[in-house]
Image 1 (cartoon, rainbow, N blue to C red):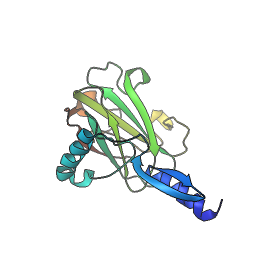
Image 2 (tube, one colour):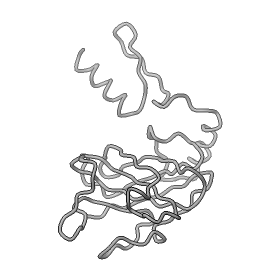
Image 3 (tube, rainbow, N blue to C red):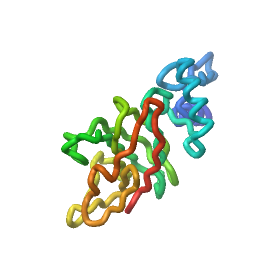
Length: 187
């Protein structure tokens, strides 16, 4: 396989497109990796794009489903490692603990901003916590006194001093039509 073919395959993977080899040539299918999008989802996406502004981005994780949370993580210094995201419900007694999270996803980090989507299980109030797992070891590395050694952030970008903020300072509403949030990483 030539270097050009490998570059085309790599680009297809990064752009989230499917490809089908045809007699040695590559033919791209513009559909997302997750399969075809319904007419309802396309209409919802078109309506959202008209009022999203900076949230008008495409990512393989964005499928236009109900309760979709479109996330922009800013101040990503290097395109190395992963952006790890945790979703918490407003009634969790274990905020920022494994037992309290609804889901955890990870995406390739991209400087200066990383874009992706995740889905809330229902309408309601939720919190998102992210960290830049620079060494891709799937854990938030900490330094002295338990202070994060890797960049991190939370929805609503609350002030963080000597301890984690209370859950209430990080909550945002997710209606059926979804939500848009920007999270600034802190070092």
